[in-house]
Length: 123
Image (cartoon, rainbow, N blue to C red; front, side, top):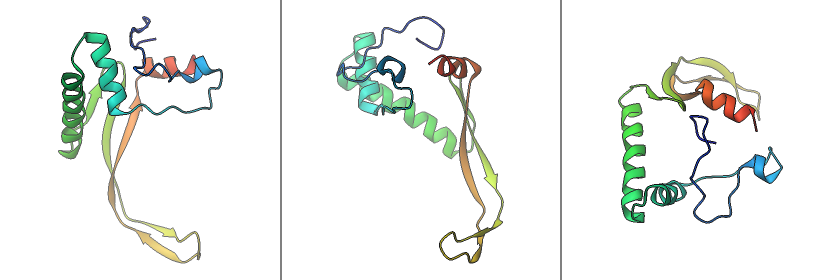
């Protein structure tokens, strides 16, 4: 099912990967690589594998560049990527129990859209 509620024509290029709901085990995980995305784009839109790989790499690079610049990225119907700054805080070394200060840092977070949440909950 696509994010717009219609069935998708994208079939995994190797024909081996299935959604967890199709496998009957929702707890099982599947990894989709850049190459898998590029192959799906090539099949869906009739592009060459090289063109579809450049397309996928370009889209992912643009998202990464925007996040590095500190911008939020919103993909309508999919979700939002945003950054936040965590301040320094006290912590403990779990092995020794010694107290330590965790340094401030920037972290990336993803918030799925309500459409994606609904699709995942239907699995």
